[in-house]
Length: 159
Image (cartoon, rainbow, N blue to C red; front, side, top):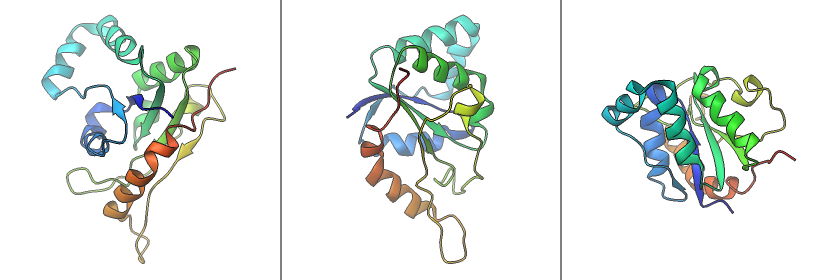
C-alpha cells in the first residue's frame, strides 16, 4: 500500500481542494507550497520547476493525479505523469471536481493520462450527487476520505 505519494494537480485552480485531501491524513504527500513559495519556484523557470518536481517525486512510492476541470491541459501535470511512468512508479487518478473549493464544486475534467499518451491507468471518482443530481460536496469528501488509502494501492506501473 502506498503511504507516501506525490500528488500531481493544477495548482492555481485546485490547491484548495488538494489541501482538503491532504487534511484527510490517510497518505503522506509532498508539502503543499503556499502561493508565495510556488511563485518563487516558478520564477526560477522551467529548470527550477522540473528540479522541484523531480526532488519531491524521487522517494514517493506512488503518484496520484488529482483530476480537476483543467488538470489534463497542464504541461507540468503531463511531465509528472510521463516521469512517473518512466520511473515505474505506481500511478492512478482521482477526480476531485466534486470537492468544494471556496464553497463550490466544479465540472468534470478530461483524462490527463490520455493527453500524456497512456491508457489503462485507473481513475477513481468519489463524486456523490443528491436527489436533484447536483454534486454533494460533503458526501463526495466523505467518499474520498474513506477510499483514498485503498485506491492508493491500485495504481498501475509501466512493465
